[in-house]
Image 1: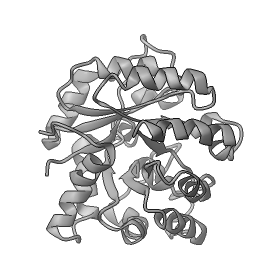
Image 2 (image 1 turned 90 degrees about the horizontal axis):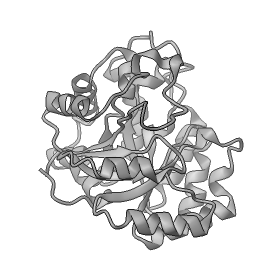
Image 3 (image 1 turned 30 degrees about the vertical axis):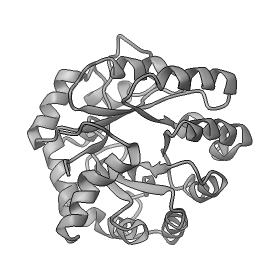
Length: 287
């Protein structure tokens, strides 16, 4: 099975109005587009990747990526309007014309309420997503994580993936929080929930990005995820180019993820490094 990067971004600052990245993150506050993506993927020999939205309620971003023709982009996760159901149906119908449209995501940090994702109007919107066989990337922080199981039980037909292992507070402590563990295990008890081992390096020092890290920094949290979800429902994702905030590069982070799953059997490593993402997103024509 081919390797799949389940989580990357590109952006062109003169094309769309992005609330983030902004001047607070100078290292990535610039256009980072398809030629940069090619160089990053080539550094690790990765030929298959999934784009994940940066803009809420904006399908033009997804259409821009879907129309790019970049050979490595095998799936696109779009930002749609989950609460205006008439508009949402129109957006989904338009996106479903593209074979590589695979799912949706909403940046929950943009919402005032931590409970936004389990509002009834959002759940009804996600029903429309599930009805079209598309997935939901749950961009969780620890204070959202308990909602994953709630949502998964309310919508057993919706395939959900937790992004970035729900961004545990690694700056506060490298020890696994009992609450984070419980909420992650509750999420994993739902067979329709998967988890991305991604976005780790930027959580060690989320503002200054000055603290050093090693595979051991993340080992305990990744162990919990692998034990809870098993090797059939975990996948790796680079979160490139956000990883650049730490001064590192694509190849280093790709190798980090492979080190973190290296104690799995060879067959299970193949699943986590590509097969599960291909299955979850129903990716076609992998290289």
